[in-house]
Image (cartoon, rainbow, N blue to C red; front, side, top):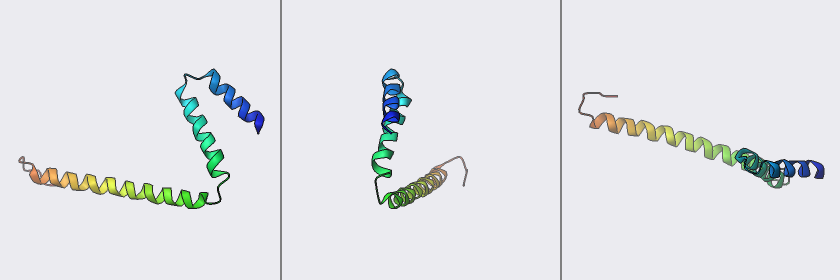
Length: 80
């Protein structure tokens, strides 16, 4: 595992101006530190999925309410 860390670190240093390499490196280290050594990773994934679903639902409801408000206040005669 140390060899892959060294190669990944060297790749990141050689491409230090490459944003995506640094971005992927930090995500990789997050997964190594948190997910692989955490006993509650399944609970975290479940919570994140629920939060993502709630945010998705909230955004769609907000869009629907906003479209209704705009349609109700429109003077052009359009009613959704």
